[in-house]
Image 1 (tube, rainbow, N blue to C red):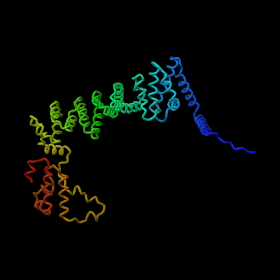
Image 2 (image 1 turned 60 degrees about the vertical axis):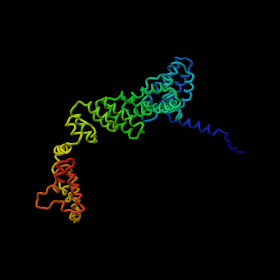
Image 3 (image 1 turned 90 degrees about the vertical axis):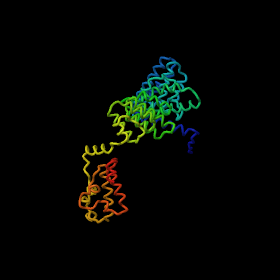
Image 4 (image 1 turned 135 degrees about the vertical axis):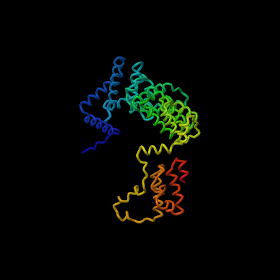
Length: 410
């Protein structure tokens, strides 16, 4: 006779679980097995009724978790083995009292970052029951996770009209940590969500003001209308705090406040900086701005723009006029058929007109339109009547910003 074995309900799952545990044990090295045993012993001693033994066990747990944050290539063994004991540690925490409860809360806050259910905010909950200090010893990822939970909890408390003082105390620890570790965008994001962006001004210095301001300027482009002006005001205060007058004037013009623009302009004492501010005002055509100094007034009114443009061209050695053929470089074309291809003269002349105007823009001289001293007819008569408007416009482009001489040439 033969008998078939019948598995009882649940027996198959129990067998799979046991096999899985055996396989995991077989995969662990002797060092990992020792580490696992040590973790189990520490967790067991946290339940000891003797406060001294319990405190020593919590301190050992603290050291184990703190040491785990140094690994970035894989999951630290300490955290991996503690995952199985997270629920039992939560039960132990509920039974703890006094200083031991605060010490264990700090550890549980870090463990909850990866072990708690998503959206439970347990990491923040444990942190608020902990020692309230030493936030920087747990690393950047912990601080980032805590910031996210603070934002959610802050919004909930605001809706329920509850106190947020303890959350602000945590924020006052997180923001300096982020600023110290070059994480200015994360500090700005946190303060933006909590509507406390003005707090960032106190941390702005010569080393980080540029990163803070540029990030906030980028945020302003995507902010709501009610937020944009507040962001600009904070950026403006940062620039003015560090005497960055050109940058401050740029933001003031975005705000479009003439009183602030006037105040920034008058605050600058360096003549060179003041000239730069005048050029900025002229570039933005802020002609309503009044200045008693005649030289600065001419800069603001763009009266000398053509002269400065020519001076720049001379400094760059590019003031010599260029001919259209210098731009085409037809001799470099390998296909001789294309190089020698005949083009309709009217279209070619019109093309030369445009190329000549743009390559010599603002230089007041060229080799085509203004050079009419030779025996040949002026260029304007070499184009069709319908194209002569473009020729006249090209003459205007050659005298860009030069009102006096440009008008006489036209």
